[in-house]
Length: 347
Image (cartoon, rainbow, N blue to C red; front, side):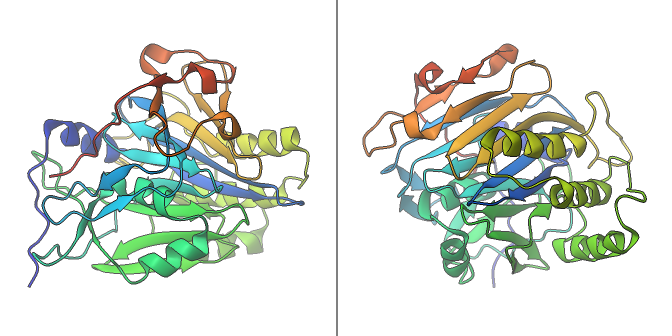
């Protein structure tokens, strides 16, 4: 019989989970002609989040930060990721065009973590997928057998458990959402699952989408900051915008949709903690392997052209610091600096 996952975490984990309680994100995938696939996401937090961008080469030795029974692996693919507080990978794309996004889900309940189980900290979930898989099919095939237990924890000093779900998309436009409901892994896998937000569960989000498709978005759309309303707007607009193989137009269109689903800066609600200000947005061009990024408090959208990065085994880990609202423009690959990789929060 497994024991419930009540972990003693480092003080840094507290900072992450306090922020996650106010997480209210949106993720939407643009599926255009000529293999034009673009994933856009917004990261919404009640408090200031401290993101940095990282370039991780292949060949890195990793562990799941869940104590002696942590799952271990060697990264097969290089990736660009956005970290939160430099203790978790929250978003990113690998060199094969696979994108992974971590989002809050209040309804999530992870399985018990028993003494014979291998564990993976929720802080490393995104990185595990980016390091190991090239396509959604590969990830679904490997993870449906549950080779490890995703390990989370109660927020220190509270009775609230940190609960998240994972969305992934690949360069073919395939999609999957991984959710733990009532201790069981549910995988929603379909090319059409191109939008996901926070609560409710993804199955209920699909039902909401069906309802609003009958009304028609040109008649009216829900306009609040609630996760369900953001899902409906992102779903309608991502289908409604023209599809093109023009990279500039496609990326700009994806940005326009995710900005429409963002929450104005300064907005928060104590009664509804899933409503929080958008802190940053990332747009991943999975055809051309370009990762775009912008924050709410800096005027420039910049990008990382992964084709100019060195992901070979033995290449240095590199970091682009975004502290103090640092401003960048254009392709920032050369602005990254060699750095020690951050450690995933966990046991």
